[in-house]
Image (cartoon, rainbow, N blue to C red; front, side, top):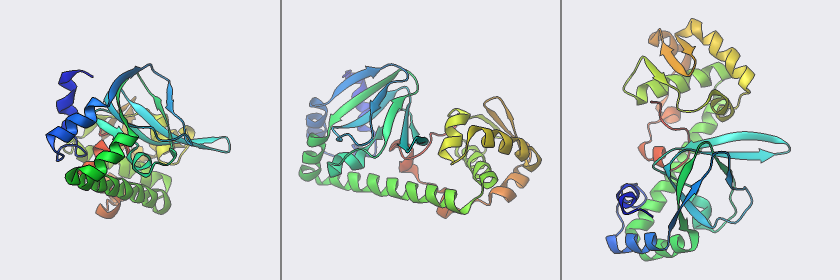
Length: 245
């Protein structure tokens, strides 16, 4: 692990409040690894041997069942995944593959559990992180169950705009096919939905989102803080999609 990478890791909500000595101990047993694009690095059902910290690149968390597949989250630097399985010493519920060349810090799950019992501030941070992940999952479930496809896409596009300071135009942080899967849609349905949203104040230019009428888009999305957040910690714990650029 490079010495200059330690401050970035230390700054994460998960590690920032633990003692320096315990942080150094945990990092001493961890190591860095570079993964090429398109590599499946974690498979659902396997034992959770490591907490993963993404320092460079991007990782898709996905799930499979009966020949079907869906995107659960996309993780970009600097973020962690999958904490719950490591703390529970349980199998991974999701698989993970690299979307581009990616650098990962691997923290042994057994050392993570030992530190959870040793450092009370770290234990509190773990609980807060897991609570944030749980709330993100509930928010996403409410979106999928309570909103139709047009409302889901509209609310996502509007929220991304708000997260980058109310920008009228921004670049999608993930490919459209990944966004479609995350929102419970097929790529074809996503394309059709995006075309229909031009009448509701938003249009696409490749990966660029252009909000042409924020009032109309807001009327369709009906933002709700109990569904849409905000939840600051969720941006670093691999429980959703990254923020737009």
